[in-house]
Image (cartoon, rainbow, N blue to C red; front, side, top):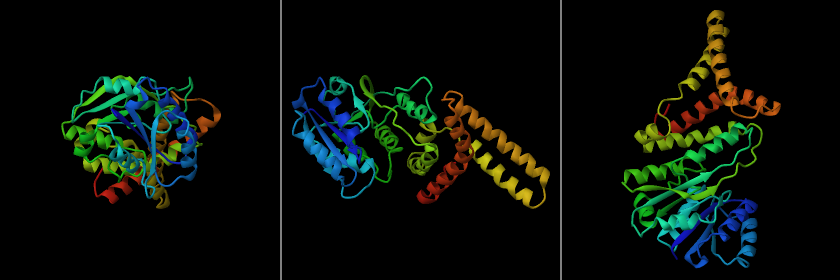
Length: 321
């Protein structure tokens, strides 16, 4: 066994089967790799579908689940700790590894105790993508994501693996990358290790729900403040804070009769909000539904983003602006 593949999943059996069928097409011989599927909590449907699939596939597959729902970080930890190989690859259940994916990693692995690899993640988007699709497209330029990476077992042991305080699929991969950097473990880019990450269907207003992930920006900042400013966000989100401040104090000024000040502050907030809206819509779909979504969410995102970031600051006792 030369390489183990860990796939966290939860209640997405159809997507998981697509991923596993891609792994069946790997040019690497089936006896040289194993697949470990870890459900984030008990999932009877996925277990049933996977048991049926395992009866037919030539791949070596193991299935397990965490005792409770903890997020993908906990599922990945359970997976890599159970792996047989000294090199562990990670991908997600909604991804589609290309046939040479695993072999490309092994072609650059010579048994080093401390090493990590980052592949190339391809994100196909339509000619007129949504704002959500464009955000997903940024995965193509990410330095290190768990949709497409591999780490030696010793590197995972040295860094402690994934921090399970990251309770959702957000920033847990950056946290591992920063831990690798701090431990002086090389992260090598392997462009031929390709995984396709399709853009999933997203409900109307999905960007509002996404703001809650800001809690984990605060956690990442607390753990790695310098690397966060260098690799994630170089300056505070001043535009969001100015928008929120202007709307709030414009309302207060109006209530107390300072109508000129209220009008000025409201004007500042409106200009910045419209600039934010135009920046989002410039490269994305111009369909009426999407334009309406971008307009409505552009007014609400600054408030939600500031709220969840401040919530994260209180929870993790840090100060990320």
